[in-house]
Length: 521
Image 1 (spheres, rainbow, N blue to C red):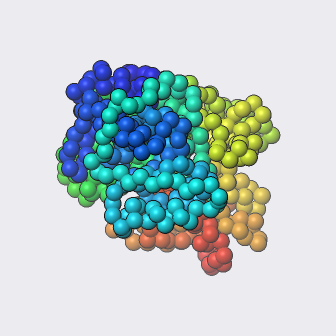
Image 2: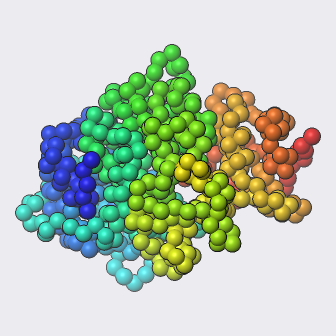
C-alpha cells in the first residue's frame, strides 16, 4: 500500500511504481489510461490551466460528470495546489448559485457540452451572483483536455495539512455548507477504504459516487494507494452500469443503499445467471442499510456487502471489512478506522456505556477543518474539540459502531422517543416494500405522529395500511412505534448526490396534510 503526504505525491508514486499498469477506463468508449499516461495528461492540463491564470492558492469551483476529464482535472488542480470546490454535475442552477455565492471562487470550470448543458447556462449563472467582488472567470474544458508545458509548473506541493478542498454538504438545510478539507483527511479516508475492501492491483473498481462527491476523492485515493484500476461512468443507470461493469470485469463497486438495491433489482430480472461474476465486494455508505441486504447481496450477487460510516465533514469514521462476521456486516456500520477517535455521548454530555445510545462524536486528522462560514463551527464542535455528527448510535462490545438514527429523526410521540431508523428497518423487510422513509409529522394530540412513506417494490401491489400494521405486530414491535399514517409514492424524492431519500421534502409535503382515518386494531 503506497502512502504520501499529498494527493499529488501519491499519484506520482503510483506512476513511478507501476507506470504501465492501467489506472482508469472510460466505460462508454473503452479509452484506457495507464498510470504514466494519466500523470502526463494531468501535468499537461495543470500547465494549460496555469497559462490561463489558475495558480497556487486560486479558488476553483468545478462541475463535471464522472469521466476522464474530471478525473484528470482533480489531479491537475492538486498539482497546482489550488483550493478546489467540486460540485455534483446534477446540481441545478439555484444550487450552484448558492454554493458559489458562499464560497466566492476565482474560477468556474464546466465541461464542453453545448448550449443545453452546463456550458450553456454558465454565463447567465455567473452574472446572477450577488456581491461587489468580480464574478468567477469561466473555463470550458473539452473532452480532450488541453495540454501545456509541464516545465512551466511551480514546485509540487509537499504539505498535506493545508486546506485544499471545499466540499458541499448534501443540501438538506436551507443553505449548503462548505466543509474545508486537507489532502491528509482524504488520504486517510481513501487508504482506510482500500484496507476495508482489501483492494489490490488485481482489482477493477469504479468511482462509486459522483466524482465531485467526497466519495469520488476517496475512491481516487483508494486506486492510487492500492494499485487498482477503475471504470468511469458519467451517469448511473443500473442496467447500463451492470452491462459495462460485466464487460470490464469489475471486482469492486458500490455507492449508497439505493445502488445496492438497484443492483439486486437488475439481478432479479435474470435470476438464472450471475450478472457480475467477477464482483467480490460491494461497498459504500451515506444512507442507512437495512440488515437483510447483507444476506441478499451475498446470496444473489455473490459478493460481500461492506457498508461504511462517513459524511462530508468526516469522510470515513468506521467501515465494515470483507472478513467481518455476518452479524457485524448486517447489524453494524463497521469498526472505527485507523487514525480516528469515536465516542458516544449522552444528552447530559456524559459518556455512554457500551451498548447505550447517544450522539456519535469523532475527532482526529480524518475530519474537516471547519466550515467556510466560521460562525457554524461553534455549534459543530464541543468544548473538547469533538465533532458532533448529529447521528445517534451505540458502540457494541466488539468495538463496532451501530447507527440508530439521526437526532432530528427521533420522533417524540406523546413524550416517548421513537427511532425512525428502527421502524424503517422493520418495514423495509416487507415483500411489497422497495424503499421506505419514516418521518415525524406535527400532531395536535400526539405532539408528533409516526408516518411511513413507502415506495412499492417493482412488480408488487401497493402496501395497505392493514398489511403494514399486521407486519409490525408480527415482528413484535410495541404498539406506540407502529406508524399512524401510511403514504405510498411511486418514487420517493431523492437528493442527487447519493440518491439518498430527502426526508426534508417528505416532511414539507405531508406536514400540512390532515391525518387520514387510519386506526391500529
